[in-house]
Length: 313
Length: 296
Image (tube, rainbow over all chains, first blue to last red; front, side, top):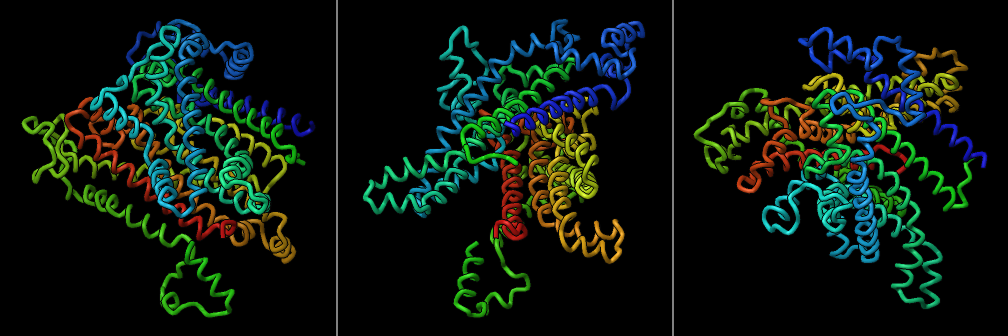
């Protein structure tokens, strides 16, 4: 219990620091954000009104306080170009990015764990070497490159899957899933390779344990031993790694969305950068960072609940 | 790994090492194969970068409207793009950019990270708390996101890309260094040096810092590969190297509309990125096997 409280304390500090960094990057580092947004040849009146709108004529500590207060009340300001609340825009795009990340996560576990377990069970065989080889490629190929190659094969050559774009979940869930399948596969490739390798390694470890020998000596079928006893015991590290990577998937979707022309958070961010819509850039960046911090906190707590042996300090 | 195992086996049998290994100038310990393979794979990229730098490669930005989207041939080894620019020349220029950004940002991340981590770990207490909380906060941002944020404020181009990627990769270096320093602070040899009257600077430089070199070299290799990937991603998004200059990521972006009819436009930069990242990953794995005491 004490550990949990300490962890919550650390979480709060990290959250505040993440908010501070987002604030600092956009407001303290170089010169005048308003000037950056409208360009040097803008009408001085426009500049003045924009500065007032952004609260730039206040001293920095007042701005900082406003920023923190806004976050606490769920207000990230307004987009300059679209003249709408940043939070509203984020929530609008979230189903795409979240869907993409969750689907990638599912693919990671569904492909990575069985592949790793199978390779470990057939150690030294052709399947094992093939798995190692493919996962080595999966680790090195950037997901946007794999995305382009997948598009080329499935959408341009064979024309089985849509060449990018997105059908909203509310209109046709099946089409939505189809349009997310290739991006998710590309995005997950690196993690699939990683999870395959980790599962293989922990399985090999588990297969050397005493309880496996006991199982063997009392005549349990080999399949039961491998896929029930060994696999179950090697899943904890896999779960941790998988949930840790959820954060990376969120960030990776920024690039994947660009490859497949998906209207998610990443595209929102890039458009905002293109239009120098700083409040929107700031808001999206902060949102992703907070999601990352909270996911890793959730993983820690989940881990604590799953494995009673872990009692920090 | 196999060699380590063999050595252990020989040692267990109480025999000397085989003659073959005794004559090697560099003892092949763990990771030998990965290191050599990694170095071999990175070589073509180094050669290309050097060729581009010395002006031996085809001009990367020279357009030839009559020779647009020409497949690989004797005149254009890797074909031309939609402006009739030579793909080999652009790939070569791109390797220069990739190496420049990789090296620059890795150095930046390592220097800043080591300084912060060493200070936090050696000083401990209040300093440690403040610096490490900041680092934790930085780590909340996935590398690519932090780099995008910084570039959107700093502006694009090679030096800003280096700065952004360098800062985004600083936290891991700080963590590693701090860990070693924290352990070193209470270690017996540091206590001994202290008792003998050695100064702080001397203890940091001569006694603790050498312990960080192994893990830091491994981390630097990994960071290099991450930096190359991040630069490619940023340039793909239009936030890194700006046109008309060539970058592998930029080339992929420009190739995408033509990929149905000009496959080489996708394959050339794609393979280049893949090659460098594979090479650096192999190098990192090999160096870890050799330098990290925990995996022996």
